Amino acid sequence: MKNILKFLSVITLIPTTSLLVISCTTQTKETKKTKKPNTEVKKPKNQTPTFSPNKQTIDEIKNILEQQSEAFGSFHTFQDVVDQIKVYAQNQGIKDLDKLELLDKTLANKNLIPGDNKNNFKLKYFDIEIPFVLKTVLQDEVKTKYSPTNLDEITQIGYKKYETHIRLNIEKKTITKVPVTLPLKINSFYNAFQNLKTQNIINLDKWNTSNVTSFTNAFNNAKNFNTNISNWNTSKVTDMSGVFFDAEKFDQPIGKWNTSKVTDMSAMFFGAKNFNQDLNNWDVKNVKNMAHMFWDATKFNGKITNWDISNVASTNNMFADAESFNQDISKWDTSNVIDMYGMFARAKSFRQSLKKWNVRKVAKAQNFRKEIENNLIEEKMPLFNQDVLNHIDQK
Image 1 (cartoon, rainbow, N blue to C red):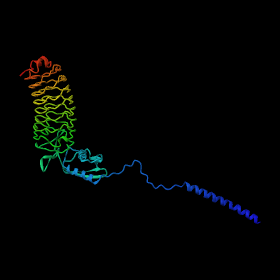
Image 2 (spheres, rainbow, N blue to C red):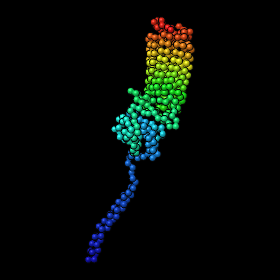
Image 3 (cartoon, helix red, strand yellow):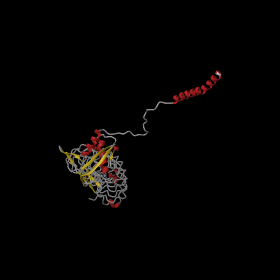
Image 4 (tube, one colour):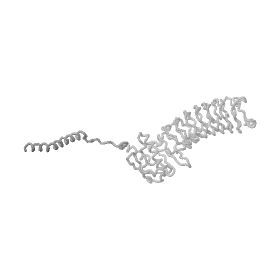
């Protein structure tokens, strides 16, 4: 009986032991599989870090806005204002100006309202909002301002709207200094420095003139003017007529000016008695009028051999009284010139042969060689038609 009880006891214990063994084994495997929890915070992909400009930069922008609070006219749009402010900011070394913008973009193409404190809006620089109130906006005009300690120093450039042009307005003729930045909206220098008495104007050479289309009479009768403006961007200028008319002392190296869009150079150096620079690389293929261009430019003998004047219709008095001129221009294409009246009158140094010129269209050439008949002898003269020749030396 005892043996039977022992046997039953052993049988009863076997499953329990097996379960314990299986349980322990399973737990061990699970323990091995369990990893430590990952406490690292993953950064979202492609997330742009938030940047906020420092207080100094914001203060610099606010200072610019204060300085320019009366520098805009009714012809400006709100976007024009932002674009101009960006230029001033760039000059002060402020970066990331693509982040400076109108907070309310619906204002962009709207014109400013004339009056005092009527244009109240906000700019945004990154996530910072900057209020801007224009103190004064004039109708079609921005007033010139002068330094209180030097009335010959302009601190705010004046300009006015005339039909389709926005003209630079320099009223004072004794100015000696201008701001570094020319306002973007100005596209005409018509009569801008007429009758100027000054020889040198500080900062004038630094102007970005890339939006200017007209230089007409810009330095007309500016008898003492001789500031180096050789680096001006003239790529959009179409009219250079009379730019240096009677600018008697002007003689700066402007041979690198971009003249590719110019159509009118009439009287450009008329009376510019000291001018004598190499202009050989000028692109003049679109010029139609060169009448009076070097008339009375008594020292001029600059190289202009390579000029393409194939579209020029008038060379009327072009070198009249240009006493020093004697460049070889024998290969010029004069096929479209109609008027050569007085072209070399009293140009007493000129002795080049013009025999190969195409002058079939020339209808006027009276006084062509007035007072230099001994220099431009028959063998050197263009082959004018007989009717023109009959009047060539007409007094």
